[in-house]
Length: 497
Image 1 (cartoon, rainbow, N blue to C red):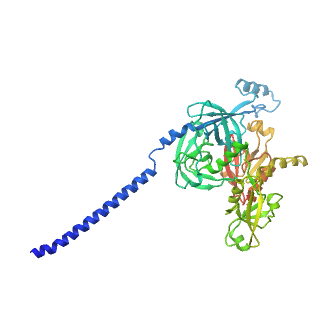
Image 2: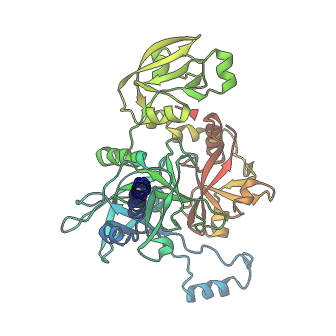
Image 3: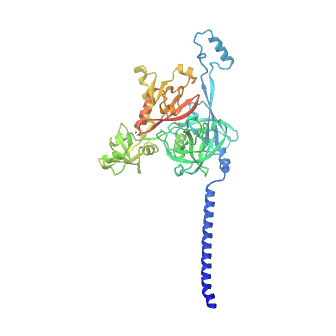
């Protein structure tokens, strides 16, 4: 009996020890799970109220005012010389619809970046405005002056003068933002006043059509009036400037775009220092290296930027040739044309940089002293002389659109305002992408490829430049009844630098 008891007792001890060990392990696992769940809960904020309260004083509403022509002429249903002409003119005058110039207003958003009153917004928010008013969260209104603008990134820098230091926000490192990170968009959507919307980073490095595009895509609600407002991370840093939306109806469908802060901050620094941008210019035409090109040229992989033409400029002076493949620029590897264009643009004008090219299968080192992109482009003088060589065509069919230069007749008919510039859409092919994306007769195209267009020739140049740059689409700024929106229409593929 004693032996049996003795014989069974050790087994009972073993069993108890095993259960004790299992219980201990289980307890540790449950503790770890609880800690993990708590960490996840901490990563997912229960409220954005603290961030909104802290940074909202630095977010502003922007109101612009522009002088436009009154309703010149009589009602279009009354023929000129009609006995009813005087009657309709008196009717319009009684109802305040005289031919006198009138004021037109527009709304947008922005944010203060320094206590001395520098304000960042979108270029399209303040473009052509002759009065700009900045309204702060507490209701204070201040007049603003334009320090400088950059249509290529759609960024404008304003300055206001206040009695004391202003609340401001700082730029963060947009390159560390990851897909899935929380973000907050603040601004003045649809003119309803200060508003906050939350979402995540949906995608990175989106390119709409601009040469220097680096957009953060987000599903945080962005609507008309949000343009120029900040996109915050959870540290309260501005990682983007809300610029555009993709929408068939003009409202948010969860696809919004904010220009990355790392692009904006460089532009703002130049605007603050020079009042304009000063980007480096290499002076070549380039295109991406495709796998079949790489095989044909004997390259181990498809990388770099293939030089297709070397006009007179810095690259020609340095000995670069058509057919060279640029693989390294200023000590950094070149992945593709888009990356090279951004690298060159971010490099100081006049700097001598080392460039490595592949030529006939061998690496060749070149030293190129960069020029200035803005001086090299100089698009306006080149577009003017041709007007006297012959009468310009009245209309042109491009990308499914029939467009016409602005004429006095169209200004009157569409009530565009006598200072209207751009191209008027007079017809849209119903089977085209343009029709699918909502363009209609009467729309006014004021920009193509983030540059102003005032003639058919300029639009064709922008389309050709997009094709030469390997773009799949070109971004148009379209105005309808004064409201702007961006529309991307497809073109064929190339990039210029």
